[in-house]
Image 1 (cartoon, protein in one colour):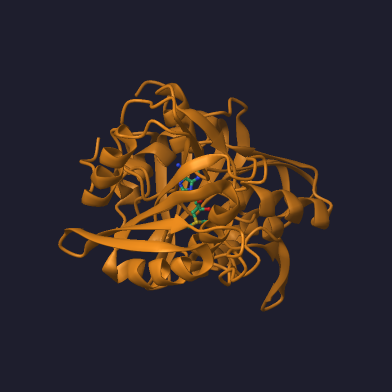
Image 2: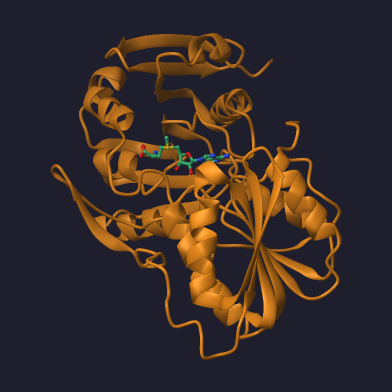
Length: 352
Ligand SMILES: C[S@@+](CC[C@H](N)C(=O)[O-])C[C@H]1O[C@@H](n2cnc3c(N)ncnc32)[C@H](O)[C@@H]1O
C-alpha cells in the first residue's frame, strides 16, 4: 500500500471533523489507505477501483463521471475536493458547487500551487460570491475555503468545456466520440496507433479481428474501433467513468455489438477471450505504476484462452517482458520504434 500524500492527508483531517451533510468529490488523486467512513458525507468518484474500495469501507458512494444532477439544490453544507489535474473537471465541479451548497455553505479545495489552486480559488470566489480563506498547509500545498453567497450570485460559471457533453472528434483519418475527463480525450495515443499498425503482423492475421476480443483499459475505445469488425465479440473495460460513456457511444456509432463495463483491470470479468489488446496505464492513480503493470498482467493471464494471444504496447522503459515471465510461458518482443515496444503474451500459466 502507498503512503498517503500530504494533500490526501489534509483532506482526511477535514473529512473526520464533518458532522453536517457534505459531499466529497474523489478522483484519481486520492491515495490509500482510506479513512474511516463518515455517515454525514456522501462520496462521488469517477474511478471504479476507488468507488468500490470506499463502498467496502462503509462510505455512501456513487460511481459516475461527476454527474451531480441527482443531488438536490442546497443539499450540502460543504463540498470537499482535492483538485484534479484536468482544468475542465475542476471548473465543472466549481460550477456545480453553487447549486449544491446551502447559502453560507463552504467549498473546500485542497491542492498544490503548481496545480493552479490559487487561480481556481480566485475564479471560484467570483462564482460563489462569498468569502475566500487561503491556508498554507505545507510547502506548496494550500487549502482554500470559499463560502457560497445568496442567489444573486452563481451567474458566472467557469469554462468547463461542456464537461458532461460527448462530442465528435476527428484525429487524422479517425472519427470518434469523446469528452473531457478521460485519458487523452482529443487524440490518438501514439503507442496505441503503433500497436494497431503492427497488429496483423503480431497475430499473423489481417484485420478486422475474428473471435472474441478484450480491450483492457479501453479509454474511448480506440483499439477496438481500429481492429474489430462485425464478427468480433467485443468486451471493453476501463476504470474511468468518462471512458466508459465515450466507449459505449463509439461502439454504438460503429455498429459494433459489444459489452462495455467498469472494472479494476478486468476484475469483474470471468469469460476468457481469444485476443486481448492493452496499452496499460503507466502513471499512478490509485496504485503505483509497478502495481498496475502486475495487476494488468495477472488479469491478462486469467482472462486469456490457453490458445489466445495478448498484445501489449508499453513505453520502452517498462520491464513488461521480465514481469510477464511469471504469468506466461511465451513472452515475445515483437518490435520497438524507439519510444514504444510491442509484446505478445501466449500460454498463460495455470500453476503460478
Ligand atoms: C494508456 S490509456 C489507453 C487507452 C486506450 N486503450 C487507448 O489505446 O487509447 C490506459 C487506460 O487504462 C485505464 N485504466 C487505468 N487504471 C485502470 C484500472 N485499474 N483498470 C482498468 N483500466 C484502467 C485508463 O482510464 C485509460 O483509459
